[in-house]
Length: 201
Image 1 (cartoon, rainbow, N blue to C red):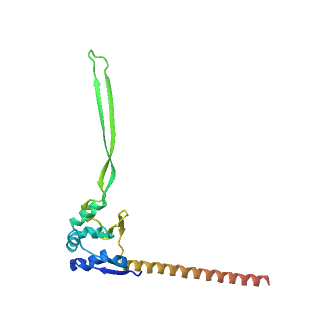
Image 2 (cartoon, rainbow, N blue to C red):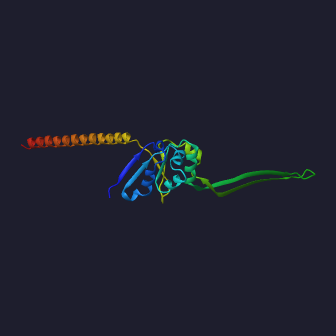
Image 3 (cartoon, helix red, strand yellow):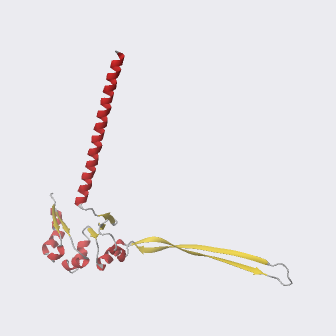
């Protein structure tokens, strides 16, 4: 079966389309694959009314990057869930006391130090909404059904190509240096052999 991919940028400007409903619901088994790009959860709800946005999100892999509105940040934070952290608490206290008896006899001095440390497990959101908003624009959080969230870093295609050509340039330079080194060794061995041959005469 051949896969047919549809890339729909700025999908929010299209509004609600029945053909997209059919593509999500019926055409997947025929090889139709959709890449829909929305600016926010608000756009998604507008284009998929009557709970259609939740149906869509439950059947797709969703990627969130450069989140800039609170509603989307709250959704990402809630979907990431909570983790368990250890919270420690404690303190140290010290005291000194002196007893001086009557009639000029010697007294006594006592000194004590007390310390205690307590810890407990505490549930905490993996990322709070304000932390989601503060993420770098190249940081992406991916939600795939049946898998834990995935934290990735986006790369622009031309930067990857530049790095690839940079690697090839280094490899070419290394190869040329290796060739020159081998040629130098061969020539040196040839000259050395000629000199030894002349000396033996």
